[in-house]
Image 1 (cartoon, rainbow, N blue to C red):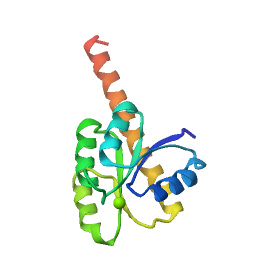
Image 2 (image 1 turned 180 degrees about the horizontal axis):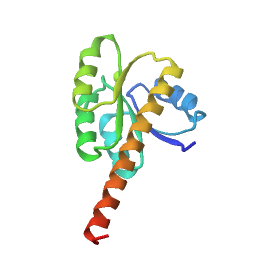
Image 3 (image 1 turned 135 degrees about the vertical axis):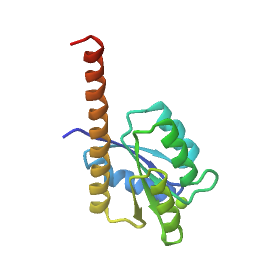
Image 4 (image 1 turned 60 degrees about the vertical axis):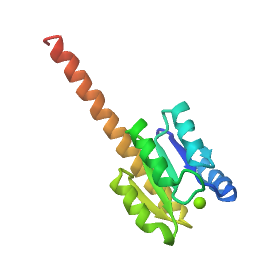
Length: 144
Ligand SMILES: [Mg+2]
């Protein structure tokens, strides 16, 4: 099975390090960021990231603002919003902006792993369709 490259973004350091530990042994290569701004520069440096787990409530750039930028600069990356009860509506707004789904904190680790896997599969399928279409177009241009 191909390793999933995950970026975990949350302003709560304790949460980030606990989740990083738990997810690293789940066929995932986990990067972390403690703010929206940091997440965006991490994605720019590592465009192979498949899935972003993105906290909504963060000081400075919040999750929704970060999501907009991610989808603009890296349209294929799949984003799962992390939300508390207070920000469920924002999570739904996030899905309208192209987020894959949202999870309520504290989240069950099995549910999270399953959701991340689904998001990664969606991204890989989309990449494959783009590669197939590109190949078809090249053959068409060569007149084959
Ligand atoms: Mg937060």
